[in-house]
Image: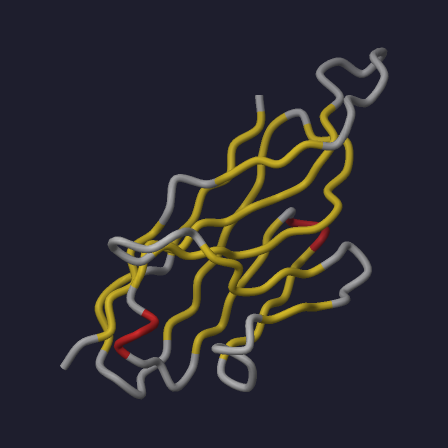
Length: 126
């Protein structure tokens, strides 16, 4: 089984910073893209940022220049550094990983599929 565990959310004032972390664990063969999505009350889940295994990044226009995504492949961990936070950044942030499992050392890797974390609340308010 694969688990994604997020941490780092909380309450911060406008203009402040937070750093989210997400670590994948379990019978992982390889991790392709990792990313962060968010969902505000009454809205659909939206992409925040993604990063490939090679380090190529993609950001939503609303966070460009303020958020930075990075990853540590050796630790199966993705980070989201969020600066200059605004009230409209308030949402539950979800970690995503597209990965292949290998349940047993003698088995073939599975087809790639998406896994999600449980979400972490980020609230930006004065």
